Amino acid sequence: MSAKVRSDQLKKSEHSSFQFSTLSKIIEALGISLVDLLTERSKEFAEEKKAEAKAIIRSIEFLSEYLQAGIIILNNFSGILRRRYAGKSVKVLIEQEDLKVTLVIIPPDGEKERIEELLSDYGRVVSGKMALADFTLIRLC
Image (cartoon, rainbow, N blue to C red; front, side, top):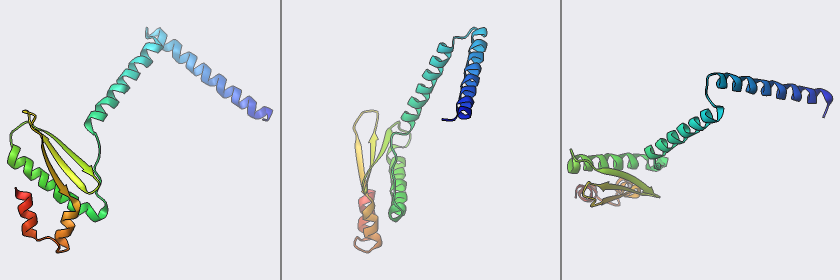
C-alpha cells in the first residue's frame, strides 16, 4: 500500500472520529445519552418492522397465463364476502398453493369456512373442457 493511500485513509479515519466525537458532545450537551438515543431508535425500528409484518403476511402470485383467472377468483371471493357476511366482523385470509387459491373466513364464533378455487378450472371453461353452466353453478353454491 502506498504512503499516499495510507495517509488518505488516516485522514478520513481522523475526520470520521472527529465528526463522531463532535456529534457525541452535542448530544451530551443536550442532556441525551447516545446509548439511550440509539436504544430508543432501535426500539422504534423494531416496532415499525413488527407493524409491517402484521400488515402483510404473505403474497399471492398469478403467472401471466393465470392472471385473468386470478382476478376472477378474487372477484368471486369478494362477492361471497358481500353476500354472506355483509355487516359482520370476520377475519379473512387468502392463501395460495400452486394453482389452488383458498379463501378462509373466520367469523367471531370461530367456525372457519374454507372456499377453494383452482386457477386451472378457468382454463378448462375457456378451452371448452368444462361447461360454463357447471362452472357457474359450482361457484354459486
